[in-house]
Amino acid sequence: MEETRKIYSVAELNRAARFTLENGIGEVWVEGEISRLTRQASGHWYFTLKDEAAAVSCAMFKQNNAAATFEPKDGLNVRVLAQASLYEPRGNYQLIIRKMEEAGKGSLQEQFEKLKAKLASEGLFDASRKKPLPLLPQKIGVVTSPTGAAIRDIINVLTRRFPNIGILLAPVTVQGEGAAEKIAAAIDYLNTRSDIDLMIVGRGGGSIEDLWAFNEEIVARAIAASQIPVISAVGHEIDFTISDFVADVRAPTPSAAAELAVPVKTELETQITRLAARLGGSLQNQVHILRERIPGFRQTMMHALMDGLRLRQQQVDETSRTLAECLKNAVSVQKQRLPGLQQIMAHRMESAVAERKQNLRRLEVQLRSLSPLAVLDRGYSLTETADGSVVRNADSLKKGAILRTRFAKGTVISEVKEKEA
Image (cartoon, rainbow, N blue to C red):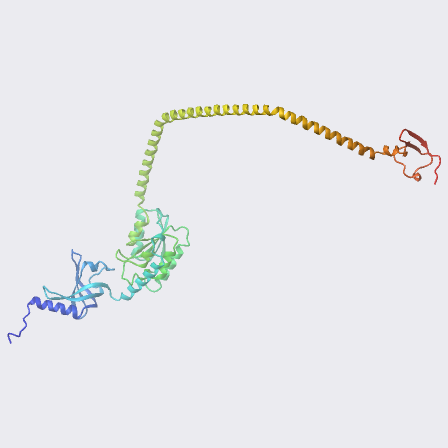
């Protein structure tokens, strides 16, 4: 019997137990309440996960807990993805946590990731569409609960930093049924006003259910459509919502949003005074430098002017010489051409005179042939009344009328004594 016994050392037993746990149970989801949470300087978390009937030791190492989206604390119900294992040196059964989420939040987290991916694919998170915040807004619109700590923090910070800043509260409910619709409507309303330069949208911290209104698509699209720059200030520094990704600027807290919204007035006034002094000193230095340079500028300009005048005079002299030479050459050429031109002109004048004489003789012949005197030369006469009218019909004459008859040679004055038919 002694020879068939399998004797384990404690280390061997614990190692076997660890292998059995890790291979037999493997990775599982476990839900329970956090208790006795400690955070080591190394970054690792150690705590107990318990329910009404039992408890188990847990460890979540730094490389895994860095991805947590919320702040764990004692009494918080969580759901963990863990590897069942055993700490061999002490034989303590434990869970090695890979992932942690708040209990009951698995479905909400899935909705969050799904909407985030959808809006990101539409470009709503792109840096290129982010609007810059105004340097010094005159009035800031705030979309939050009128009774929460967020509005008190925002007002306190804004008025402390810039006492006369304008603040307009668009009061809404920030959690529960219908909250998302009211938040979106308030954002749309502030965009109808012409006096709002900047908008803060948010609330104080809470659970993922409390913050869920700021993960709704209707709120995200209202922020994306806003023509007014929007600072998202939802929850605490570790809280992230869809509104944070869509907004132009994300602030970790409402107070931080107020700090981003306006500069400190006294610091701004000091900076303006300092800049004004620097500008005045710089202008004085420039004036001094320019005054010292004036004599040199004057001398340089005089030299440049004299050089320019000499150059222009040289150009004028050269142009005058060139023009005179051209005129001399032109006159010489014209003189050489003058005898030929005179001969041509004389010939043309003779031809023109001869042509005009020939035309005159032809016209004279035509005129003579058309002249009434030519008809008289053929034995005809021309009779006119005393008023110069030509007599064509004897019936037009009256007895005693004085007539003037013109022959080819000479004229006769007569009186009508009698008319014959």
